[in-house]
Image (cartoon, rainbow, N blue to C red; front, top):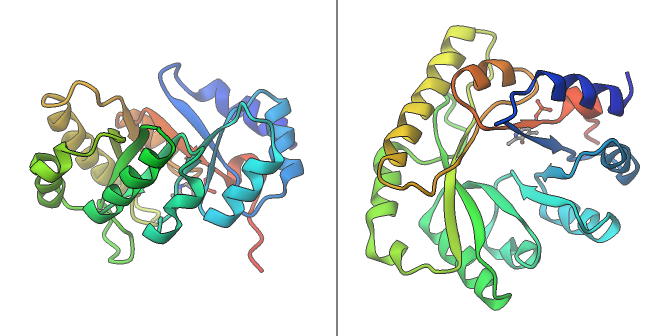
Length: 219
Ligand SMILES: *Cc1c(COP(=O)(O)O)cnc(C)c1O
């Protein structure tokens, strides 16, 4: 099926309150343009250099999300234009995003990444670290970032019960936080293999790559 057909099919399944981020990492600009021409305006990338190049090459009404693991020293490259940074998992990184956003007179929306998977390798904060950041005075002084929600990735497994448990865990943390911060509006969870489950567990934003663009080719 074509990119346009894949997009149509996925969008048909998404409830109105769920935002689709088209994850286009490793894919050529022509593929992104095909999605753009089918109406897609929100794209997610994992690598800073690739994001910078695609931003320069593509129409300016695209909303670019950074969804990978962001290194502090690279924040300055995306700060002028990025719409949402999904995977923020340290206070140090938040401080750097704040500093770079300030230089451009912007407020950058961020999602804090929560570690919900079993694998040690997946990045993210636990609930205690999350609360520690959010209640610190240093955090309250950051005026050029805004925490708009949370993001998480489930364990890479066939076990649907486990994935559901992990997504529900994240939803519980999100709901608890929402009672303290009414500005939260985004719960980013769900990828090609698990987005339906994520939506049933309360996701408001899904990050879908291979089901739109086909399998990735890493050289
Ligand atoms: C690559 C990636 C995705 C998309 O994965 P698919 O399985 O291709 O849909 C979503 N989220 C993150 C953080 C990713 O790195």
